[in-house]
Amino acid sequence: MSAVRDAVLAALDSVVDWTSPDQRYLDLVSPGNSRAQQLADAAKSDCIYVALGVEEMVWDVPPHESPAPQVTLERRAGGAPMAPGGAMRRASFEAPPQAADAV
Image 1 (cartoon, rainbow, N blue to C red):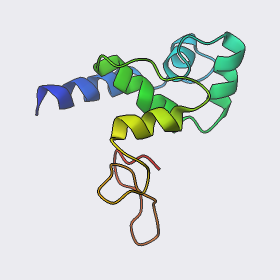
Image 2: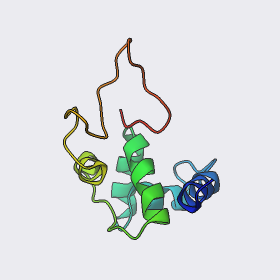
Image 3: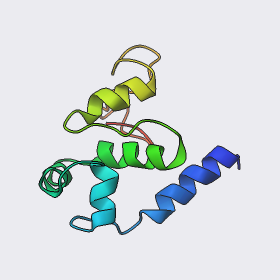
Image 4: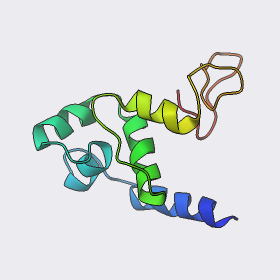
């Protein structure tokens, strides 16, 4: 395995079982915000927040900003969603989500 893959897997392993209202989880999904905003963000569909938080654990990237994590994820993925050749795509029955997809 590559060092980057090992680092990502270790970061993912470290957040297993983190859930709201655990402060570690709230800091992962909504860094730098008030506890009220963190709880509000955690109540949303937070898979993108978790993906961004794990990236921030592994790479030296600026923390994502609430409430627009999709914009940050699109920027980091290298393009607009659904763009040909982009890192994001729309899932369908013919092409269901795969591991590490942003849906």
